[in-house]
Length: 374
Image (cartoon, rainbow, N blue to C red):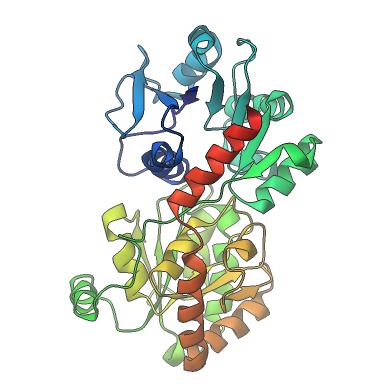
């Protein structure tokens, strides 16, 4: 069986949005896919000319174009790619769209979220129009549609009117060799290096409106200053982020909130481990990988009761809060701060829940979708 895969959103760059969620999902899935597949299956990942990744059991086919540019990638996807698909038994697009014209073969498309519908301001008009039009087309015309959470699956069905029975879920995983509880001495050294107190709260994510940080900041401001742990906010600037910094200034939180910018992947586990609490007030997520990573590191979590986040923490003692209810967030923060017995339970149950999500399981779910399509 020959499987062709459009993996052009796999990037070699560290930092920026392209090295975040979608890249990580493709990267870790490809690392495990050939391990769970039948021995006679052959996989080809189509990537840009500058891509240097290699995976056991995966043939890397480089385009003549450097497809880091969205416009060049669209040209490749719609004009050049169709001529390469006749040799395959199945085609998988790892991100949202497939070519309009291609040979008649089973196809699978992965949809991570529909933020370009719910939050259209985050993209230029041309990119938004392309994604909205072509994702609808791909979902309706593909043999199978794959999503990364049950929440996104429901979103796809509701927005595109497709049969729920043709939608498969292959949730994110985590790398337990990286995201795991670390030795206390290493954390002491890290806090010293970063000038961190023993107790602080942490958020990590792109700074943009759907992360809902102003609500968290307003709730945080209601806590008495002497009983308010440092709040550390990590993540690169996305779009329309000015309101976050304005809220900090308006509420007089400049001495209580620290912005640390984009967090390199090699530091993530140290930040999660060092924090006493991980907070994630996002209004909408395709999955919510930072929450899973924090739980895998043995950190208690408080999340918004929205989209896929309730899925990720299901079965744990992590607190779920109505996303826009400032008073509820205040109460949740106070509870998390004051109840040590809850934090112990939340850590233990979070570690148990996190073990359900491995990248091997993700690869197995992807393979199952291929088999259904075939």
